[in-house]
Length: 436
Image 1 (cartoon, rainbow, N blue to C red):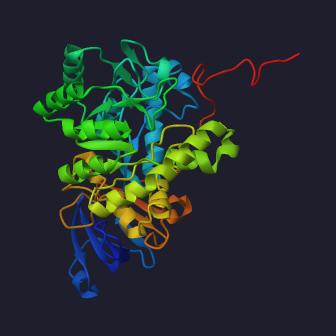
Image 2 (image 1 turned 180 degrees about the vertical axis):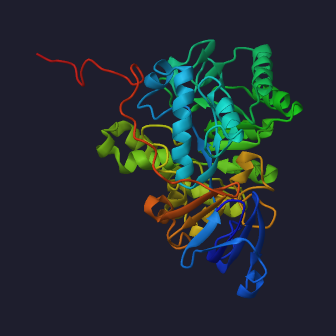
Image 3 (image 1 turned 45 degrees about the vertical axis):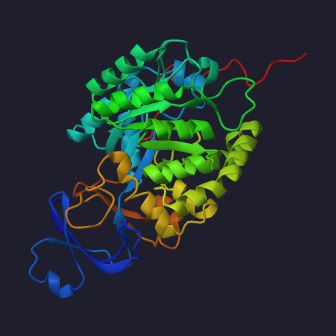
């Protein structure tokens, strides 16, 4: 399949939230040409006919929170001190193919080591290597109070995925630098983890005035801003400052909810990381403290999130793939499962969060995420019914076709890595301290 073909006898899930229906999807070039309801409409067509009777065609998944340059670190120490720019770029390319073969045809790379995200996006768009469509942030902007890495964040300069800004001039300079490099988004770590914190969520690390300056600077150059927020006050300040999308958004209060609704700001809860660590803690030998923290975070927030969904806040699916807890190509469907199980969404509603809604993160709301004439032909054909069970999207043996830009993607698994490059992972003297 390449360029002009018809997926015949499909069960069509179009991404809009409408119930599935039977029909034939005509792809011409890189776009959806038409959707036919009757066999008679095919008689004059010269396109290749591909009969997928009994299978579902839907828009390709869009992962609205991914970290393609990280390569599945087990800790922030590994992520910040064991990664090299050139090697990170090469490995990110191989990981991008895994993501594409899993049915994710687009993703938002929220922040990046070095400039890997921008360069990988450009390589994929140029046809140099295969991978999903990408929208990218650059280095996440942090203050010296940090992000989720605590004391590993320096007081100034850059480390890992972060750029620390210490005053108004540095905020403006770093945002303009990233936009000059070609980012699609500016990401700000509005909150972070600090020792001896006694408040829920994370500590707000930016003032409102700083957030407003950042948003105004980016918006003046036509670039949206996304904020990592865990805490009621941080979310309110971020939305009031003009942020265009919120990651996590936990511990939102009623005032914050009203602002989200009023300004129609999308929310990417990204519960997949927490859900995986909770469910597979023993298998990963994960910290019991982390498991308890994440269980509480989900329990404390599902009620408010459901209220936000009912009030009309656009929800997007993001997996935070890129860590040891969320390996590439395996868990991109999981956020849909969490939305169904924890937020009591229907499978169709969850699918919309991973297709039509998530196109906002790509800045292509009128191009991606729907099966509709004129939209890009990014499609997933699966031997199952995700409107009844979204977990079929995570079973690779059921993925029959991944189509991107009207072209069929080779689903042959990439060669397994023989070993990790020297110095790429943390090495310990021992697993425990020797006691006599």
